[in-house]
Amino acid sequence: MRFGHVFIVVEENHNYADVVASPSMPYLNSLANQDRLAANYFANAHPSIPNYFELTTGQTLTLIDALTPHSFPVSEDNVIRELDRMNPTIGELTAAAEQEAKKRPEALRLMTHPGVGPLTALAYVLIIGTPSRFHRGKQIGNYVGMIPSEDSSGGKQRLGHISKQGNSLLRFLLVEAAQAAARVHPDWRRRYVHLAMRRHRSIAKVAMGRRLGVRLYWMWRNGCEYSPSMEFGSYAGQLVTGHGVN
Image (cartoon, rainbow, N blue to C red; front, top):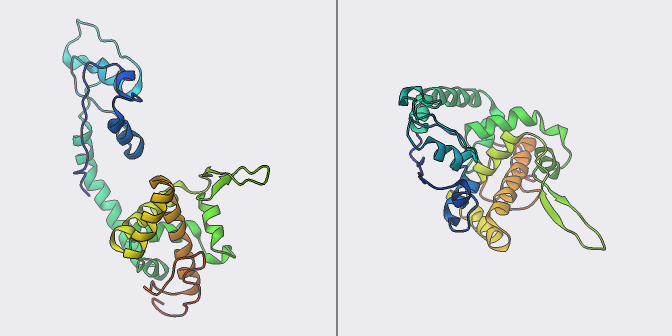
């Protein structure tokens, strides 16, 4: 796994408030909010280290003029080199997960669905445990924490943020797999675009992830592989049984 999409953004000699959450820099802040632009911090020795700390954390690190660059508190490699060092370990873990998924017929069955790879299939099988735990596909959304909260009064229904209860890893993988499915499958793409236009992209991503979780539930419960004839809906896949991986 390589990280060719990682970018370093340097805003030197700016106050924290001038950059982060500033309306004059909407695109940078959009990246930070949506794509974790400012997730982990590494820095090389540099006279402007206080600016970098203020930019990313809101706190200023005071340097003493007499200090030499080698004695600065932060002298670790930058994030790109750190990621390069992690690549072999990530590759080994990914290969191990793929091998484990191939040993499980239920995971292989789920991998026939567009966008679902070994990591998502294996995590789904291990975390859900057995489909017999749930009587309805909708319960999967509740279990993973992808059902929006509800605040209704006066006959009006108001839906809020998702509960985020349950396993955050599986929730993340389902959303990512649903996005992958939308890139390669026309029906998933149309459904995602329709939801994104009606609501918001973030809401559409979660909705598609929840839909995928329900679809995988029915595939697993009925022992069937993915088929293009499967229609969208809460009970998609439940009528097709008894074929595919044994």
